[in-house]
Length: 90
Length: 293
Image 1 (cartoon, chains in turn cyan, brown):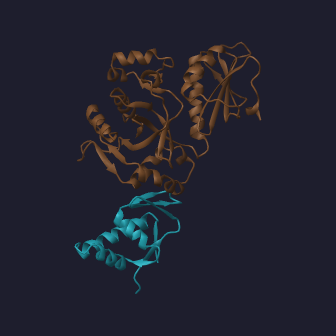
Image 2 (cartoon, each protein chain N blue to C red; image 1 turned 90 degrees about the vertical axis):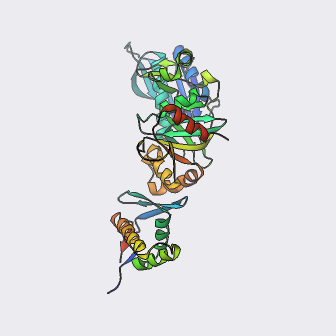
Image 3 (cartoon, each protein chain N blue to C red; image 1 turned 180 degrees about the vertical axis):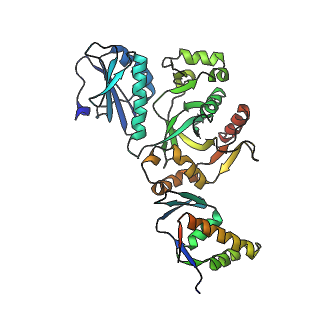
């Protein structure tokens, strides 16, 4: 079974403002401000990524944070992006 | 084009404007012209280019008590037959024209105060106290440039007051004190309204209402006073950019996805703060620290 991959939705418009990304959904008109870590994940999602790959990348950036915490946060973040239509699953 | 027609003989004109907007008021009524010349004095302009909008105020030809207001040569309706009320109506319509005008002129629904050329925009939904805070800062020596609408240059990070008088509600009387309040009432452009007075602060303190650099944006009424943190709570530029959107004229017509990148240089360069409600001297002292060189 292939792991789910995530990628940016074509309906999402992104602007980097300071150290945060502002996302705007052109259809729902919802706006989200991502924190710097979320902004890093968004940056990765210009190509399809699995949850595990994103968590591994974050783990390398924050080696002192337990892996299970990172995995939990990545999953919650991706779920929120999916819920707002900012990313799609494939 | 009607806007290019010259006024008929016996009709005088007052011309004023801001940015690309050039306004004219034509009237055969001397008192109306004199009143308009006083009210729009800080924004008077010269020149012969066509006005972007012009109004006429004239007596009703049918002998009715109201005067007739025309906009760009088209009857707009009756207006109370007093110079104060008629000019106040045009003053409102001129700012509305800026608000509804081309999106190259950005307005923000905010009070504007300044000290030594450094300005602070105070944004907040109605009844959050932005006029009260602006008024208190004026009383403590800041320039009070506007209490309602400011024109913002997003690229240069400057702000200027919209061409209208400041409106003070009657409860501000206690805040300002009787001596200052009596000067407000006695200034040339001052007049009473249902809620208080409108006036030009420049007629009181002698400071011209020109553009200032924007040193900070303050948001009122967004934080819970009981939550931990000081009076001023810094906002990341991204939150400031989204926070100011509801107060911009262009947000009604331009897609947010287009507007945010345009706001980015401004939101990145100008620090923004949430202001937690506290007693007025504490709030003023915190804001004044932002105006220190």
